[in-house]
Structure formats: C-alpha cells, structure tokens
Image 1 (cartoon, helix red, strand yellow):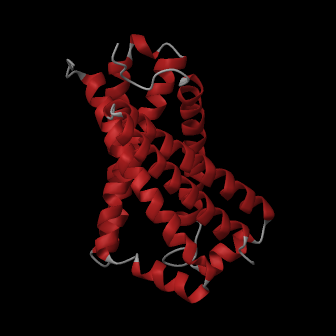
Image 2: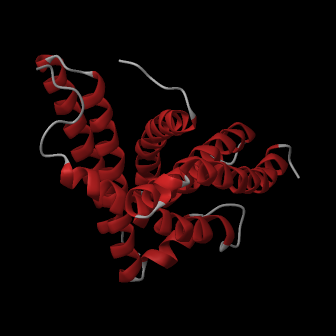
Image 3: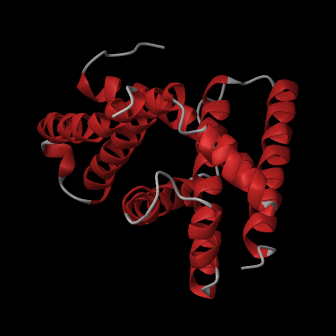
Length: 116
Length: 118
C-alpha cells in the first residue's frame, strides 16, 4: 500500500489514534463511575482522581477530545457538505481554534495540579 | 481478490458513525458544563450526581449518551480491526473480544445508571 503523507492523511491517522485513546478512556470512565453503587467509594475515588497526576493526564485527554471532535466535524462537512473543496483550509482553521481551546482548558488543569 | 477495508455491509456503520459522532459532540458539551463548571465543590461528588439522577430525564439522557459512546467507540475499533487484520481466525477472535467488551460495558453502565436510587 502507498500512503500519501499530506494533511488529509495525518488528519486521518491522528483521528484513529485519538479515537482509540478515547475508547480506552471510555472503558475506564464507565468502570470508575460504577462506584456510584456506594456513596463512600464514589467520593473517595473522585477525590483520588483530583490528584496532580490525573489533572495532568486530563490535559492529554482534553487534547484527544478536542482533536477528535473538531476533526469529526470536519469529516461531516467533507462528507455531507462541500468540504472536499476546502478540507485543508478547514483542517488548519479548526486546528487553530482547537489549540486555543486546548490552551484555555489546560490552564485551570495546570493550576489545579500545582495547587492553586 | 484479496479484500481490504470493511467490505460489504458497512454503509449503515459508516453513516451511523457520523450521526452518533455528531450527537456525542453535543452531549459532551452538556456533560462538560454540568460536571466541570456547574458544580459547587472541587469535583462532582455523590450528592451532586444524586440530585441530578433524581430526575428521570437525566437517567434517560445518560443512558442514550452511554449507548452512543460505546457504539461509536467500539465501532471505531471494529473499523481498525477490519483494516489491519485479514486472517480469518485472528479476526474472529478479536471481534469476539470486542463484542464481549461491548456487552460488559453496556451492562455495567446500564446497571450503574438504571439501578441508582436517588
């Protein structure tokens, strides 16, 4: 198979990788939330998940969510709209907005992790 | 001819992956807002969740969110398996494992939400 490593190809590869990461997170999330069967266990677990290590990991989670959502919207525009004509511009436009959103969302997470 | 990709019968999966994705983005915005901003304490504690799940509407929305997310995520993994694993036996084993994981997640998630006594 021959791959053409252009914007669309990278967009697709990152979509796959972030998708797999998010599915892995979904499994953990469903497991963690199942502790709702006991009030004490749930609160202890949630408290544990506010530790700095998890807050920093959430920065990566946020990056995956923003990328996968934004590129997903781009896929919808390409498949159902006229996005095929401007998919690269769309990719870089959405990436710019996504990075800004990620920085804005990471700020409180970092502040929380360093204890402010 | 050696067959690559998802093969026949993938039209619905292709379409519904997009539909479920769109709804997941919308649901996720609400999920983010409710669990990271519209809370009083440092994190969404049991009492916060209890108050919300006391409303049947939240239980229904959470179940729909759960089903869409599990479907979308595991259908994505299925596409990856179909793309890279062409050997019959390994493919069957992986798909069987995926179905087991899916049914476990759906059962676990449904029990968490549906049997919650608010």
